[in-house]
Image (cartoon, rainbow, N blue to C red; front, side):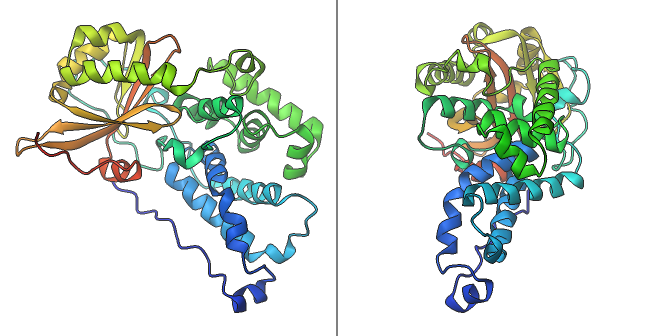
Length: 352
């Protein structure tokens, strides 16, 4: 399964064209700086990395075409978010909810070789590179909220919210917009925005998730990536490449889950994860791994040993943790033809 969605070229901004639209000659230069944050917004709304790319491209194209109607009564940023929100609403009106395997049924016994059904690519939650959706710099608190709000579990929970509640929660608690600003964007009242936010918070709470950007998050600043996550990832990759089950057990939470989109199969529990690794997943022994950053989390590209020599791509793995040095989730996306180029990973590793 390989995505065919590609980013289209930016619209022409030649003088004759811009004169027809009323846009300034440098409209592309005005809009392009917003691509990254708009991609982050659309990804949280839609749950698909390529779908977010398409939504942002459509947003910028609509903005370019209608720039003569932008009267400056709001900021350019607010205007672009209004367009992006409408684009996302259009997408959500014709698509099914994206899921993770854990949202589709109960866990399977680790000894089963059956990987479950294959979920269509437009139905499963997709990973996203950090540098495609997060700012490279800024207030540490905002950066921490940004990372937390693209984690797989949080984005999956967002998909269970109605579209308007989803937009309200992301705009209010992730992007820190005021209720009045969100009301203006959605053409509604402040009371309606506050009500939608409370309902969205309740839904996230029912799924056991602390809301990103909430008061409790503000009281507990997240350490820098290199202080905890980098060290934990190093320890995990060292144990995994050596296929040292004792070392892996020490790093796994007792309720850790393992899943492999696009298959619906998943296992739960530290002992079950280890049983899968030594049973159906024993072919992972001897793998090599290259770290990447995905969904604000620890991640790596996994390469299995190739009988013909070297190592071949196997999956893009995203690790989730509980903040205390234990891995709570291992999600390995197996569509390497899609995800390895997206994350800048080589198509194979040569023999040493």
